[in-house]
Each structure stands twice: as C-alpha cells, then as structure tokens.
Length: 125
Image 1 (tube, rainbow, N blue to C red):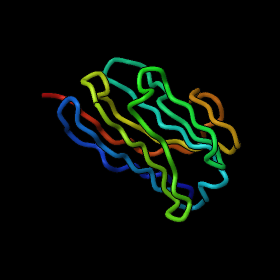
Image 2 (image 1 turned 90 degrees about the vertical axis):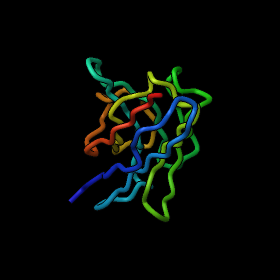
Image 3 (image 1 turned 180 degrees about the vertical axis):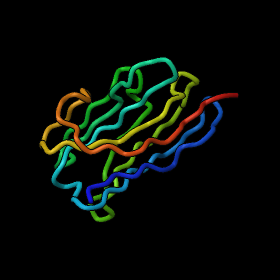
Image 4 (image 1 turned 30 degrees about the vertical axis):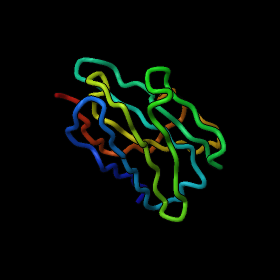
C-alpha cells in the first residue's frame, strides 16, 4: 500500500519553530517529487514547498521563503518541513504529497497522486 503519514504538528507561539515529518511506505522517496501543501480555514489549499527526486532543487511559496526549509532523508524514507519564525497566518492543516515525476511543483493539480492525512499547525499567542 502506498502511503504518506505526516506528523509533528501542534500549537506554537508566534516566532517559534516546528518540524513536520512525512514518512513514506510502499515506495521510495528517491523516485518521487514531494510537495508540502496547507489549507487554512475557509481558504483553498495552497502549495508551500516542494523538492524534486534528487533533492537538488527545491521551491517555496513567497509567503514562506526564508522561514521554511524542505528536505528529505532517503535513508529514513522521510521528508521534512522545517518551519521557523512562525506567524499566525501559517495556521493550517499541512499535507505532504508525492508525484511520480522528477521535477518540483507547487501546483497540487500537477500529478500529485499520493496524499497524507494532514497534520494541524496552529500559531497563536
């Protein structure tokens, strides 16, 4: 069974950091592009960050550039989203997703066919 499982969400204060994990089973992260997406209440889901199969190219939404870092550890078959300087507007359910292409894409309609269940991130004082 092809599966992604996110973890690491929680409640943090503005300015704090959080690391999300995305563990894959049934396939190798070396063979897919990975994207992180988020959906805030009342808003459409948006692309946050992505990393291509070889890990040598990444991309970020403008709203998180300089604050978030995406990486993956193929030995653990896990991807990570390291979030720092968190803001209340980062509050959302965060999803990781996989696409069977080498390249990186922030567009969820661009071939992402395996999705995790999501993890809640709440940034509030």
